[in-house]
Length: 279
Length: 125
Image 1 (cartoon, rainbow over the protein chains, first blue to last red):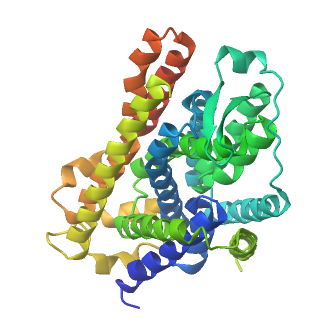
Image 2 (tube, rainbow over the protein chains, first blue to last red):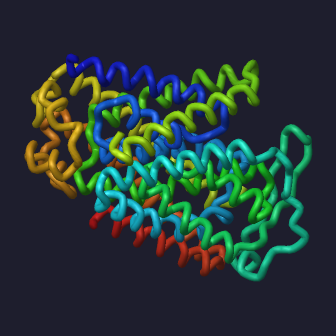
């Protein structure tokens, strides 16, 4: 096959990923790495680097509006991002050092676990936090944002911040190792564990991801794993797809889209698992 | 909105716009062969299925910050956009440190400084 077919196909696939990611409320990275590594001839090293850069670009693009609207909080994200960025560097180094089969196997298991997590996670609101824990209070991890849907200001605070720091260390490790971005894990950790309101958890997840993925992306870049022919069409494709996805959001049926994403993850995770076993 | 959050948002906004503009322009220059790449795209399919170490050894592609010396090659111009994306958080955090100190938020200023150190260490590793 001619070389130019691959970047065009990559653009088409990432454009579709961009649409689906917005409709399903997940980052593009979690779909990009398993799908592209399953369908395209690029080695996993290049796919992971592109996955991180793609997730990073999406998160950085969305962050200013979320920060200005108060739906992302620097106060909440900063301590967690520091821990996550340290472990993401370690994850990236481990990921680049391990044999490809082992990484494929671990990637397959992780993707299947994410699909299970998405399938089981409900939309219930666990954001009632009566009082901050001492660490969260010391770091002033609290604030107020305006919820346009409710038509009022929402005061928020978080708890279980020590446990959360440990959880975000694990999330950073996985993000760096597999180039997945980490929105799939950030939101449940912020919302269900720490008790941040769901909207704030979603907004701050992108902010966290932009810091955590930056440190891992540098490791891949410095190792030479950034292939322009993979990175550029992917980023442009996902960004344009996300814009169309945002327009389609009003008409989409979220439950159906979520089921499609879970099915895609199951297929891609299963394929990665088989690759890991050398099938 | 907090002052540091407002300033951080502004830096991210402009930096991301700049990076995306450079990314699109540089990829067009590469795809349309406006100037020579280090590695012609038709050679890539022979290498892209292999691990990065094999690719580096076979292509002579640089590691670390070696790409800075190859900015006259169309395939390495894209790295400018990638580096801008990678440095945005560093610059944004560095910018908010004096604001946090002025507000008396010493712990958060310390976290911001540590974050800058971690990101720079990753960038220079």
